[in-house]
Length: 312
Image (cartoon, rainbow, N blue to C red; front, side):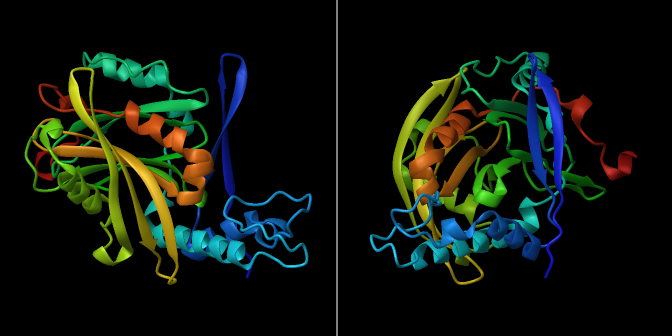
């Protein structure tokens, strides 16, 4: 079948250089898989060892130049399955890329009397500062973090019933995501006083919103308390196995930053396929989660909130 999945590009000129922002609009999970498999060349899925062709980071290089890497091909298919598993929620209309930038994010933080995000974000990063909880069904929070320039940002949707969804950025076709999550049924907490089981429970709640049968072997690797901009955060390393609907098992690694702003516990978790985490994305994901800031108490959000239906 022919896959129709247009690539939308927007250009933004910053300091004399042109930056390309890439958004992928996918009409169906099948289209998502087609995009991914189209990007996986025959040489990367079936790569003889010792050849001149570039090999995907998920491919298994064989010592026998006459044999193809069957394991590499199956892992590529597993990646496609992971994309399909998240396609219904991840591939939604993104906000225009030019709406973001470190300067704009810091301007919004300054408007609330808050400190700016660090200017030490890596080269090639943008940033956002967005309101989570504009609808009457949620308590409002101001969420800010940096992310790579070529990642797509999605924001919560708004309708007469309130707000749904979350703030997320990602390079979805490769399985790299950073997602904001409010841990349900928790009150304000000193995150520095909590043990690994607390963070395990919070992160499992974040990754299992579609059901408890989508993961296995979840493990907290390390926790590290930090204080930033007068707020307490716990940096957490974790790993787990994603179980896709197609029957594949995909090892994923990630990191998170957990805090307690206003009356609750919030976190930003970022993860990618384990092979990509080791070889490419670990530094990116750590920069994202370490830049995360969340505010709620004492802020006047009235100008940014949607009125309740009875007030319209």
